[in-house]
Amino acid sequence: MIEVGKINKLKTMRTVEPGVYLDGRELGDILLPHRYVPENYNDGDMIDVFLYYDSEDRLIATTLRPYAIVGETGWLEVVDVNNFGAFLGWGLAKDLLVPFREQPQRMEKGKSYMVFVYIDDKTHRITASSNLNKFLTASPGDFTEGQSVDLILGDSSDLGYKTVIDNRAQGILYHTEIFQELSKGQKVKGFIKKIREDGKIV
Image 1 (spheres, rainbow, N blue to C red):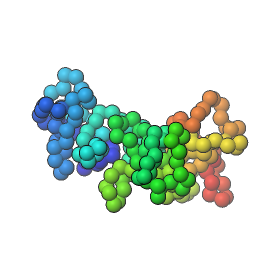
Image 2: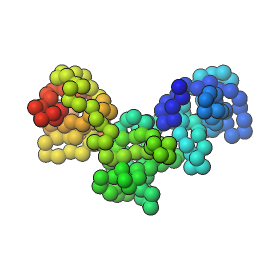
Image 3: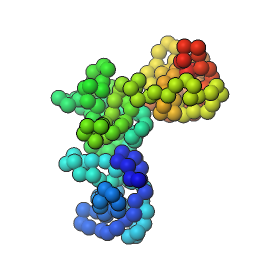
Image 4: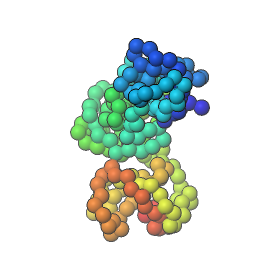
């Protein structure tokens, strides 16, 4: 199954002036612009591409990987704010929209925020939300103490960094448990030290 907003392995079909068409199966032919076509490719090759809608609402492919794909969290910077919401830089030509309804606190240009990337049910477009409680719904029971996990670091306080755990839950990494230089937005390996009685994961 081909999924918009994720990495897909698609077959090259034919070369045209704007680029190379890929076999999008149920989604039809999908253009991979020339600037993203690998050197020395041949028709029939399989290429890993990210699928998204461009500024003219056309489904398009790129070999670039955005900083976060659908189903992931990312620490992204606001590059613009207009009447529709905030727009985040995420490594692609078209910026990523965070509608105002998905901003518990209004975002400001130039600041970075932890967001979750998803497909909006109404518009079917790739969208982001800083309302992490809406998407990171894994319960403490889904984890075990000592379990190895992937962490993304968010805002810091006197206690430590707020973290996203395996793109499924939120927790905290205490400063007393940090033994290297870290920064907001960094992805690191960690482990579940304790699941507290109140359900918080540390």
